[in-house]
Length: 120
Image 1 (tube, rainbow, N blue to C red):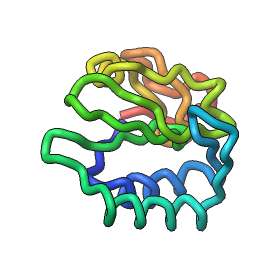
Image 2 (cartoon, helix red, strand yellow):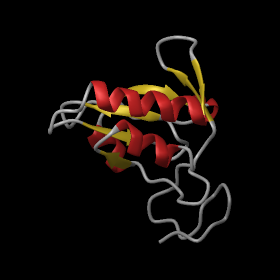
Image 3 (cartoon, one colour):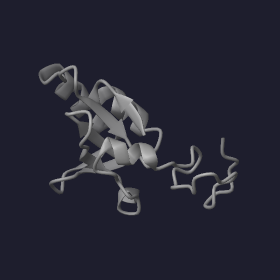
């Protein structure tokens, strides 16, 4: 799971994983352009404090970590429903994902069980 200091940085990374999101607590939907505009506006109007950061899941869901531990998922992808999104950063660091397909992998495995990619 990658960390980002601004929502715009998180969105720029998330768009490499998917192309549409829904807001976690409503039915608002966003495409790439809409989420980029929202992120730029949010960053300029509400800058993050130094202890907070954003995270992006392997499938492209975007979460906010205000206390360095708890993750509040803000933007979900269509595949987020299949993804086991962690609620804490500690849990997230224990889960390993394939860098090619984003699926959870078995610790110690040499290849991804979903796509067959060689794992580091």
